[in-house]
Length: 489
Image (cartoon, rainbow, N blue to C red; front, top):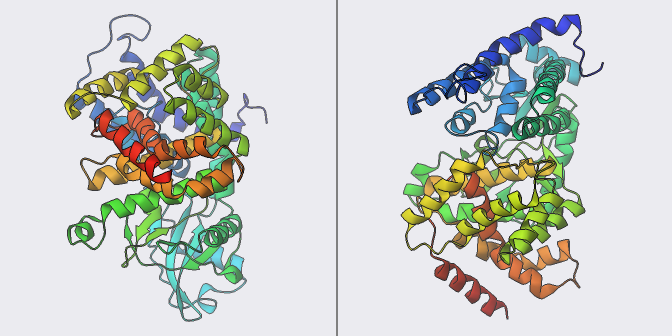
C-alpha cells in the first residue's frame, strides 16, 4: 500500500485519530496566530498550558498502546516538545488497561501447547505490570520464582495500522509545512516503526538479555535476569524474578543510608557508557520501570525488547564531535553535528555555529553563581525549540539515556553535577574505551584527555535541552580535570 493511500477499512480509525489530535493542533496553531492565518498570538497562561498538556495525555492514552509507546520517546525530546508538555508526556509511561485473563490464557496455551497451569506453578492471574505491548505475571517454574511476559493479543496488527496512519498524517502535514519540527516527528516515527517491530519479538528479546548477561558477567554491581529458554516463544518470555525497588522510588532507602545516590548514578553512567561506547549495543528503553535496585543496592536492568546496535562510524563521528567540543572549537563541533545528521537540510553553517557557541558558553561558563548560570541556560532554553536540530536514528535513544541519568541524579541530589560524578567514572574506563574506539595503538593521549571530560560534556549537553543543573565555576572544573590528568601521567 502506498503511504498516501488509506484502505476503506482503516478510515474509521484514521477519523478517530484525527478527532483526537486536530483540536489540539488547532489550539497550538492559535498560540502563534489567534485566527490561525492572521491575528496576534493568543494569550496563554501557564495554567492554560498545563491544562492542555493534561488533555493531550488523556487523548494519547485513549488512542491505545501505539501512542502510549510513542509518548515514551517524545517525552525525552526537548528539541521537539516544550514544557510543560514534556513533563506531562513522561507520566504516560505504560498507562494501558490490562487485557482480560481469558485472552492471556489462550495465548499461553497456544504458545506452550498445554494449559498454563500444566507448565508452570502458582501462576497469578493478576498482572504485576501491564505495559503498552505486553503484560507480566508472577509464577514458579521448577522451584524457581519467574515472571511470564505475554505479548498483548492483537497488538502487532494495531501497531502496524497506527504507525501506517500516523505516517500518512505526518507526511501530509510535512508536504504542506516542511518545518524542522515536523521533520523531527517523521524521524522519530520512522525509528519507532523499525524498533517497535523488534520489540514485539520476545525470542529476540531473550537473545539480547542473554547477550547482556554475558557482556556484564564481571560486574558485581549489576543484575540482569536469566532466561528460561525452554518456555520462551515469540509471544511469551519467561525470566528469572528479581525483587527490587524502582529507581525513582528510593527515597526511603537513601534516607536510611541503604543506597548511596552517588554510587547509583556512577553505575548507571558506567553501564550505559560501556553499552554505547565500548560495545555499540545498548538497552534503549531506559525508563524508571525498567530499572530497579535490589536489597543489596545492586542495579537491576530489565526489558531488553529495545536494544540498539550503533555502527562504528556513528560512534567515531560522535567521538570526533566531542573532541571538537572539548577544544571549544565551535566550527568543528558544528561540523560534527552535520556529520551525525543532526542538522535540518538547508541550515546555514553560521546558524549552527551560533547555536554551538551558545552551548559551549554554558558548558564552560565562568559565571560565579548558580543563579547567573541559570540566566544563561534560560536564554538557550527559550531559543532551543526553534533551533534546526534533529536527532536521527540512534541519537534519539542516546537522548533518552541522558534523560534517565540526569533525572535520577537530580531527583536524589538537588545540586547534582554531571562533571563531578561522570569524569572519574570515565577515567576508570579509559583503557577499554581506547581499545574499543581507536584500538590498542590509537592516539592514547588524545583519548585520555577526552575520557577525562566526556562525562562533563555529556551531562552538560543534555542539561541544555532538559533542565538546569547547578553549575560549578570553570576554575573548579579545570582543576578537577588537571588533577585527573596529572594522576594519569
